[in-house]
Image 1 (cartoon, rainbow, N blue to C red):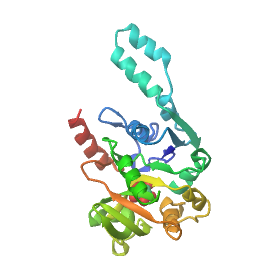
Image 2 (cartoon, rainbow, N blue to C red):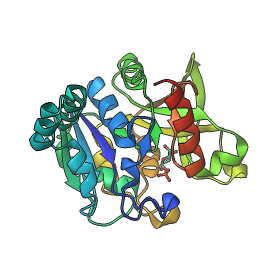
Image 3 (cartoon, rainbow, N blue to C red):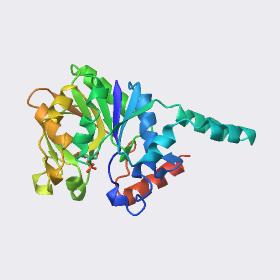
Image 4 (tube, rainbow, N blue to C red):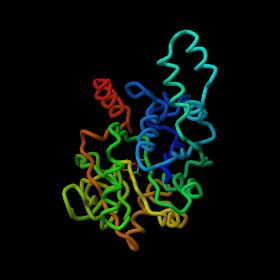
Length: 268
Ligand code: G1P
């Protein structure tokens, strides 16, 4: 089973910092943001992480590539703990596919269709960190309890933030588990069916890849993953699991990135 991490975006909200450095490589506490996400994928049922990269973002691939010269230099200088760190990161099971044009999150996920090999798959968005790595196994348990259905993470957000996210409609069927009736991408507050925002973690059935190939551009002229999931509801059940705000951190804006840094650096 694969964990797909879309990472081909332009990082617009973080310019000028992201002019030369991919947003995914910005430091959060003690490591680049994307390293948390890769580690989370590999700590779950995923045997491999597939990063959907753009051709320009060499730094991401360099980060996860082995670097025996650096390891040797560090060992010669007696810095074995750092050498171990470099070896560990270079040994993580990461592969790449490329999104040639930034046509939206749904399009990015579709770029990994072949890699997902007709199996269920995770999608992990780098804007959201779950450093305890507990959410994906919890989502898998909800899926198992409901015949292998798709499960997405949601978090309650204040009214003024609703229009930044995908939002679900549904009914709570057990503690923190909702059966989804509809999904809307970035609704105006008055059109939002709830305050439960899609929070960057998805466990999806293979049918989603087929639907993504048919989805038309939606909000912002982009191929939206949310629209494919809404279409899936006509054919399959889907559930949402509410993430505890103490476990999940948004880094999608400079302000939330700073706040997350402050919280996670306290834990070092
Ligand atoms: C994406 C998804 C959205 C989700 C959000 C946070 O939006 O399209 O449904 O709520 O991530 O996980 P983006 O932040 O890429 O605009």
